[in-house]
Amino acid sequence: MKSDERVVKHPNIKNPVEALANTRHEFGEHGGVNMSIEASTTFTAMHADALSDMFTGERGPDKGGCYLYGRHFNPTVYNLSRQLAALEGTEAAYCTASGMAAISGALMQLCNKDDHIVSANTVYGGTYALLHDFLPAKCGIAATMVDITDLDAVEAAMRENTRVLYAESIANPTLRVADIPALTDIAHRHGAKLVIDNTFSPLLISPRQLGADIVIHSMTKFIGGASDHISGAICADKAFILDLMDLHLGALMLLGPTMDPQVASNLNLRIPHLSLRMKEHGQRAQLFAERLQALDLNVCYPGLESHPDHELFSRLHCPDYGFGGLLTIDLGTQELAYQLMDMLQNDFRFGYMAVSLGYFDTLMSCSGSTTSSEMTDEDKQAAGISPGLVRLSLGITGTVEQRWRQLQTALERLGLIDADGKSQTAG
Image 1 (tube, rainbow, N blue to C red):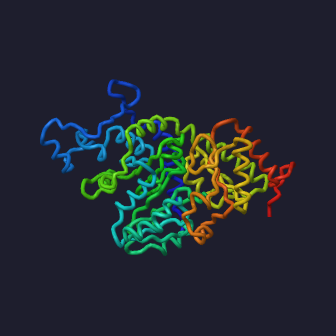
Image 2: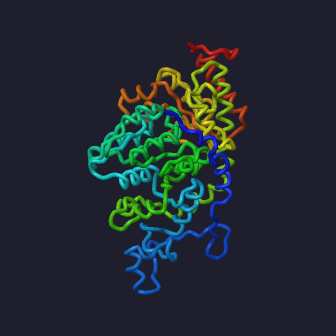
Image 3: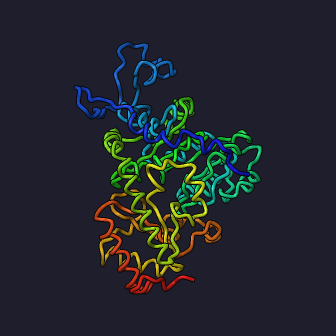
């Protein structure tokens, strides 16, 4: 089974640029160029009957601009949400206190007890634990984990009670690419919703325009850009967002993962330069990946023609921003991976040994023992996550050549390449 030709013709190629240029701008209360921060937890009704109308849903932010309570809707958070909707090309969106809140809220809204989820077997470790452990044990929602690049396996895993097909646009940490149009066809043919986590690729890929029903973000990463705020977002149609905020059955309303308005205001100021950051992250990652490949090291990056999904990514993504800011180097053993990261941080100040990604400095982690540690050894092996896999989220500080010299010297000192730039580990 393959994607149909609509992928090539899809307006996704241009829309992310246009969407960023046309995101809604909210002026401050007194005409300031930045929107005001609404710190109130509760809101005044001008007439007594307005309060009851808000509780019944007859009035709200989208119906006369009425606000009820900060956990329900907050004007500052609501305005940021509208920017996320514009960014992803969805009818609506709402922002949450974390990326995991967005994932769990969306899945719990879509599924009931005895329902079933088909998920990629390579996802962020927290998502894996939610699907593999928490939802089955606590909520009676089963999950089947499959190789999302094997469309026949995905098809075979779908059941009559499957409500969600879940994947990451670019898998964490293997960087495999989801064929979103093909997955959309499978999900919809079985009456399920396709949910895509687009954390690794804001602006690069627009899942909604490729057919996905719901788009998730951990805005802690590239959208935030400074590793100073935990935050998430759910982008979908208006009806689903209102379901999430329903006073009786809304997963976000009742579980309460509320974004602080100060955080929303700060994130609002990051979105205008997201395009510049994503382009620079991508350019640097492409250059480093090409040079590492030339040294015969085991590097993985979607921008390399050797990547198994390079052609697919080339059809799905917006070329203005390249192929993303993450690459991996597989050094085979955890010991060697640790040695490289120790040297890069402590001897060269190349970056930091830390989880997360999308920071303005380079972040390095050995995925198997950190962000994918929730996975069983068998599942890590099936996903292709070796003990020596080092994930690099390439930063944008320093000059490119300065950072490359630091990495190259570290590789030489560890004996991974010789002074002539030849790999000592190839083969």
